Length: 288
Image 1 (cartoon, one colour):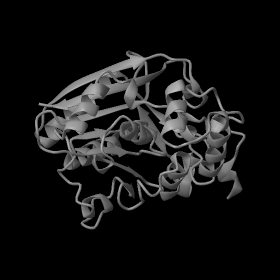
Image 2: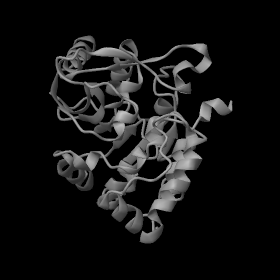
Image 3: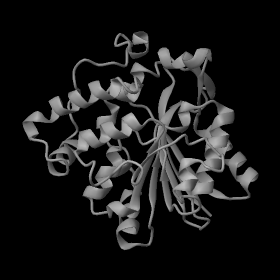
């Protein structure tokens, strides 16, 4: 079992990278962490989270980076949620939920934001990182759930989320699955969204350069053979991601404005996605 938490993998960093000023501000002002203790606090939480989920985003401290607020559409998201034009934000595969806390700190009512992840320990690690277990309790604001469960008693449906969400944030999520499972996950996302023009899906994920060829990517490390099953991620390029959503639209009778771009950044993503063609794909999908 200890091999499952192996710290010799390339994506486990011993030292905390420099904390982005916006994330530092969030931890100081929202969480009440002393500025001088921010890095140690992040390190302590990472060590606890690793014992729950030895994922690249945990080992390389990517959970201490904000994503949603870097999107040009972020001011619109905040404005809609603050005004009540939108009433529910859901982050799928939210991990420690840093973007959820950023929304709240920027004035979005905490009653309008929710997050879900497979592992309750990750959600609890997020409560520890932000010191807000009372404000964002498990089984209410934060739901431990198998997102792919479509049984009648699945957690998200029992929580009354089907057809109620205005915007879904799915960062570092779809690339966790093979191509057929991505299609299943996308269809599930649509059952949660309101059937309204303007409903939105945003996110960022690992991919490959345009023209490099979308591909199956073996899941590295101990997570790659959980239960003796060899798992793969499917990494898209810009065109294949658009093709995925064309297929989703045809299967569900919906139409989408698909905005997706690639970004080449030599960052900690290369600790896991080590191909020369690695890119980050960022997307904004708007229901027509």
